[in-house]
Length: 406
Image 1 (cartoon, helix red, strand yellow):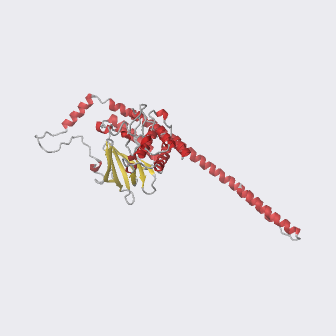
Image 2 (spheres, rainbow, N blue to C red; image 1 turned 135 degrees about the vertical axis):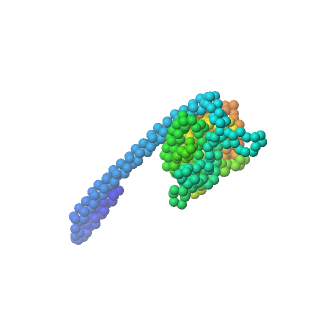
Image 3 (cartoon, rainbow, N blue to C red; image 1 turned 180 degrees about the vertical axis):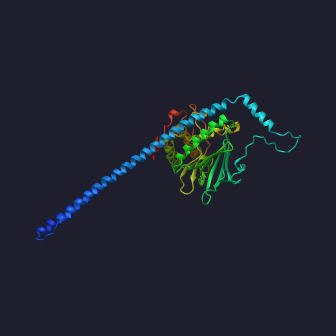
């Protein structure tokens, strides 16, 4: 349309100049240029309409593709929820007969030793850690014939996390290999665990297209153990910035909140719940200082927690950051929002969440410990309400509220 106006303006200018010259007894041929300009203008209009139609069709195709991906992930999330329920049921139905069989198997796989013999007894059903996995068909020093484990990054009740090198790619780039240890190795349990692992991998593959979620590079099973290979994020966890007894300025806390909420908006729009948001699972990327959300929690269901570990992690969630409904295995989007709100309170007060007191109504008592405006405090209070239905329903809703007051 603007190009058409420009053409009309040029034609008008030409005709005006020609009329002035004609009045001064001069003559300029205008018919041919005028027809040329009209033809050019018509061509511009036609091309503009064609280009607009192409752009409209491309935008529609992108919208349909995005909708298809969203529905695909929604279906996978539903499958994931079903698999989690089945795994929990299988873990609960483990009978005394099964425990006796496992004990007998362990007994059959041991060697009787003399008293005070220092020799270590290794059960017959012992499975090596990733550092010790061997495959006769491939390089014995590589996991899956491809990944060279460099050092341990972490260990927990769900498995081990290693920094590794991918020896099948040029320059052997670094990556993160996460080993997940199933709670049981009977075929019935492994079948469901394998399905949950596959579903989680497919979800992570889609979520990893967001710039602030690690890309999933590969996933595989070896020796009845499951492995996720993800992009290595160079940086440091948010927990390094949350020093106890040190209060973070409100402006810095708001920057953290909005940075993580932007990721959660994307995650929740795909019907995915993170389930384990805590400072250790939020990385500040070195190259651009942006936050990256790591370690989604659903696949951790393949292994229950030991009693000691339950003191730190509850129903796939971390003590102090997990809301009440997550203790009962009923997480929702509001659970992620609660966890992020607790991180904000920790940053503002310099006090770990599990050391904060509660009111008679079970709400967190924290305002008197922080330097924060009433408007921001009200947002955070709503994020960490004891009852899930009183919290914000989505990360997008929190973002909108914060934008209004900042």
